[in-house]
Length: 63
Length: 398
Ligand code: SF4
Image 1 (cartoon, protein in one colour):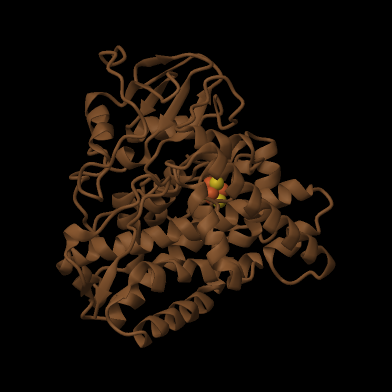
Image 2 (tube, helix red, strand yellow):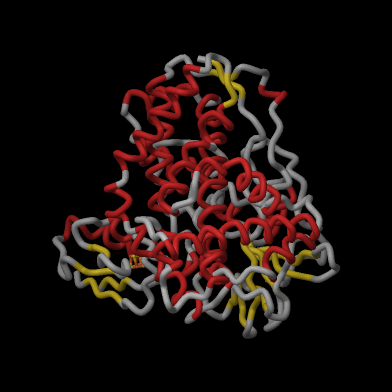
């Protein structure tokens, strides 16, 4: 599983951090998404996929 | 599917069902199709979007504009038009203007920043509850607890003196009341804006560690933009969470076995709040957008220059996403709800709202195990004309 983000689409809602806190973070100054683990372990897949679904900016891609 | 039978639905629809359910007119529209034609007070036609998937599509798609000067942009009442047109707030702008203004505030509402504020929020909740209890049973939960908690929190964060709370609470209530005239709404808005402009002036001279001081001292923000952003935070920051707290309390009092699970910790406050957000969907009037291109939505052809209203309340009851959606079930996974909207305009303050609701509801039910309604439920009246749904007062005993 590979997680990529398009920071240009991120609106800093923090849904990703709430849903998969070990995979996503928000930058301190503007809240834009940061990926902590681009290839998270398989057991996190449901959370990561849910984070991608919940992301209001559709900024997260999981492949 | 062709657009519905041409039946016209006049908005806003009267609340006529269980106070927790969307008005039956919206539910009937939702049952007919996920996109239906409707007529507004001014005779204009717009599309009522009621399905979960379709609401997400509209709110997540830049072909639907949030800017009120676009042709077809729907206004629910003359008063709403007044609020919307006269207030340069990023909620009603498209990118890039929207992103420029919103990003000035995102740093204050990061999940981790809000997490750091939990002890302070807990303190405010505890102290407010102390005061309510000291005042004796029964008490009105709305004025003694549900409204003071978020008001105190947002005042501290924004840098607005809480001492003025009666003044701005009354003005923001007028602003959100669809039964008020254009004149009343316009006056309230101007008054609130001049109050905040003056306060910002003061913060420019004597900055403190609060959001208004930071906004007031930015070179790239005009005084009018500063006041508009502050107004949005102030109004959204207390009215929404206050109504959610009071209505959630009532919903839990009506479901004692679910409230018991919240007390025992069997159901987490986190899960409970997501379900309450879904079930109550307090933003009951539609979120307005204007189509700027021709497109097809849920099988319906929508043309550039036509308006749509996204009904969060029916989307959150969509059985395809939330089986038995009309039932409150604190143990369901409700995280796909759209109570905070969707797309780039999704509520900026949601981490704060969640933290406040989790702390307030858990503390209230833990500390007052005997909490109950002090009047007959039939005596309660609801804020049916308000943009944000709520209960007028909630007399409780413990
Ligand atoms: S959920 Fe999406 S929009 Fe929100 S912070 Fe994460 S990446 Fe950004």
